[in-house]
Image (tube, rainbow over all chains, first blue to last red; front, side, top):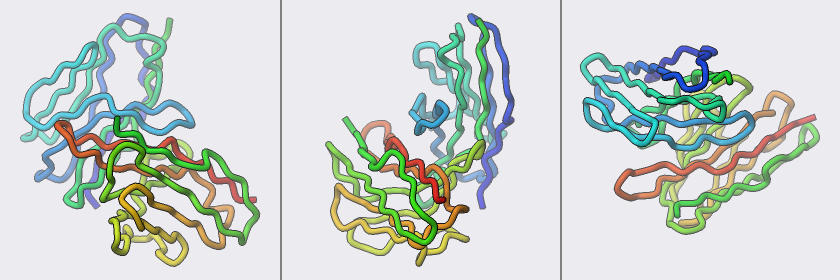
Length: 110
Length: 116
């Protein structure tokens, strides 16, 4: 079983700060990576995808990928209380399904 | 675009009965759908991959005779939990791949199953 590891948290940051979420994966051959946000009792919603080494920015979100270190991260700038949720890292497997980490719980305090 | 409709959103059933969950791709054709299960405070665990017109591929440890998957058309996949037991109570989510520039995976809204 290919592993996707995340710190379960909770990660608590004050409103307006930068939240940094990390993820490591075990399959060195993985090529596609995704960050999802999941509110309690809801299904995941896609935040960003990243396929190449380096940074990818979309609004307040920046995904970072380092395939050599098998590491992917998500930065959330100017965190808002509405960003409080569980963030799931997902890696595309060889069967074109997503393998998910356990998620990191983020709490943004006003 | 790329909407997956999942029904029902929640269901309560008696132990020993069967429950069917439907997922429909509303504005695209989904040749492949994925079924996940999520227990409280756990991650999404892939149960099976459903391909239109063929048998589903189940992950190790998932009973194919208990979790029946049918993907008879390009827009509909169903998961039937047969002879449900309380330990089957979970959040079931389907996902389909919408082919496009980002190869995004769209999720249904999920079904909360409670077996009493």
